[in-house]
Amino acid sequence: MDNNLVTIGAKEIVNRIYTIREKQVMLDYHLAEIYKVETKVMNQAVKRNLDRFPNAFRFQLTNDESLRFQFGTLETGRGKYSKYLPYVFTEQGVAMLSAVLRSDTAIRVSIEIMNAFVEMRKLKQAEHDQKFEELFGKLFKLF
Image (cartoon, rainbow, N blue to C red; front, side):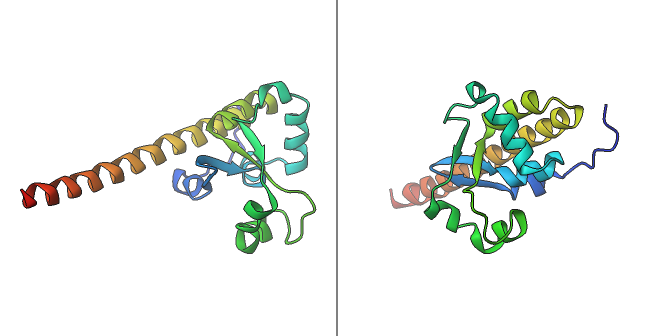
């Protein structure tokens, strides 16, 4: 196993999960940073294995979607004026990355990211449940 892996906390990963097109995704350059590879190298590995990455696993942002990240994320991630639109990976796409990158680091990082996606879903479900209980309580008071 790669003992040089600096683990990233679940909170830090969750802060890099965005909702785009009603899907929870991570930006390619954030993933590359976490996996400790260059974004270009990671995307080339994906292109050599495109059959593993259908649109449900990975897609490229549009100009409008990309602009949402220009002030902040893009400036620190790829450079302020990148000529390429970023790709995003869904949870399934992140899982597939460990097979494509083929390293102990990729496997361990993918597991951490998968756990963060699960925790994020749990938090969202808990928020949803709380809102439902509040609404139900208000309705109950009305009757």
